[in-house]
Image 1 (cartoon, rainbow, N blue to C red):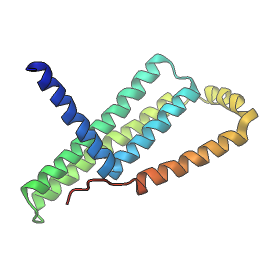
Image 2: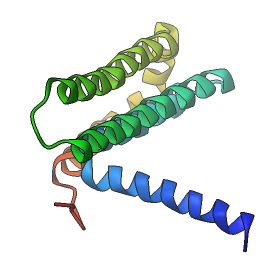
Image 3: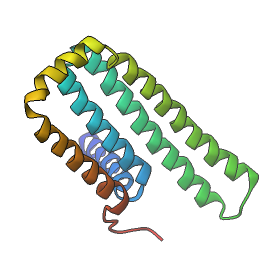
Length: 158
């Protein structure tokens, strides 16, 4: 197969990394729930193409940095099991990297979703079906809690 086979293996490794993060990393599952919520709000808010581009790029960067943080943590764990200051700093800085990006993403969401006139329009559209919307939001919150905290962990590494 040659180059095409190498490319296919590269994609397989990448998808295996995403699968690991979904299965084993609670924070990655939190980011997935946040992403689905943001995209749902974007549809409800009727985002324009530029707004979608900003939201997609922001979500992708937060998730990519969460994967990078997982890589840092696992690499540090591979290098040393001892409690060392350098290991703590590496892990803390990796976590801080994700936190800074997540806080930036909240600021971006405020900018994208911050127009009160558009929210009034959203309110007018959903008002006739408020009971259904309330039930849907409640159900989504329950699904997120179950997914984040009780998602089955298959093949857990020890």
